[in-house]
Image (cartoon, rainbow, N blue to C red; front, side):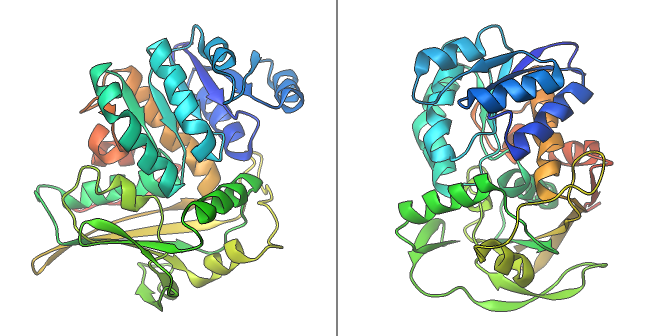
Length: 342
């Protein structure tokens, strides 16, 4: 447990940030609230009784003040194309680990490209995409690989019954689209490809209770950054149920609405990961509720393992490289139920 360790949460008042703050407190950490909006930050501080430190990604000194005396920082403030690099720089100056919940492909690529050597030399841990997209799929694929040294392909199918995006999700998506000039991405032949054609629509046979569903193929998410960062798999494809893809594309889809005392929405998910090598196939499955809420136990479990020395690497590392994937996934109960290869 956290034993009172102070952890800076940048973007603490955002939708996901609030879940992270609550999970940190549940596990015995003391969140230090941070972000650029002094009004929202102050309101959260009054609500929780926690210390608040206003900081901006454009102001390095304010970030240094926000991280002073903390043992780690969790960045929940998108768009991460804007915030990740400055907060990582501040973490390196402070000599503390950095974790974020970025789903932005480009921002995660930037983190690996810009900070891999510096973080390794500093013997610190930087974990990008430690969230539902990027982190969970990487853990499941790593667990499915087991003793395989390599695989031919990995498929991550997201069985979401709906997707009510937050304001942050919409903003991050807009930033990513501008950076790739409206093109879509797929990962094939060991590299990213930028394409102008429409992605295919096909069917995926999810495990029960979801079953066979129409999905958008090559609905590319952060898994195409996290998996290839440490697994020798030349083709990584992600899929999204058609209903969820329509929700996220529609400009009038409302934000997620809480339906329980924890603030979770009614959204459910099933993540089906299949890895193939030669003629063999292995599968790992996870299911649960509310992709934003479940990001909190993912990133806080990672934080706890980093701070207690339960990591397998230093530098910029994805979840599957940094942690014992099967053990990590099983530790997420009851937030996520998993079915892993034996």
